[in-house]
Length: 117
Image 1 (tube, rainbow, N blue to C red):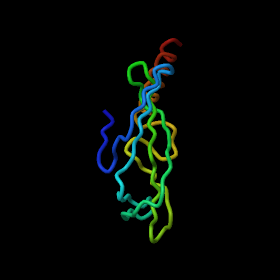
Image 2: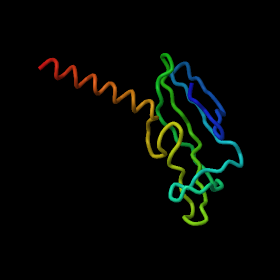
Image 3: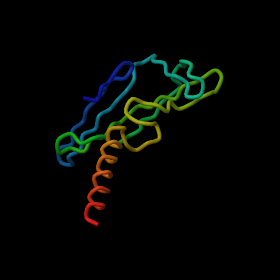
Image 4: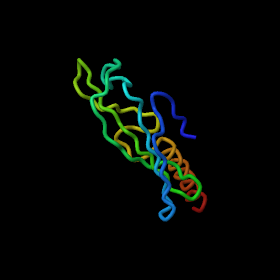
């Protein structure tokens, strides 16, 4: 459902019934390389941090993606955060699908407001 392609993998799914939240943890395979955001060359991972973003609901559960975002070490540009991820941008708080859903709601809301006037 998330279209998880290599080198990415789902490492854990936690369901929290009392809070109606599901957390999906996404990690990359050990030894993976990612492109430098400045020059596009493949580089080794320097380190990483987990970034939590809101994703589309799964049934009645709010869904969050906990992505292990790599920082790469480029010979030319130094240590850089991998900015483009399959589910959203590194600094964003929402997945691409959640942003698309919000945009579709806002278009519907604008049409309703215009129709009423």
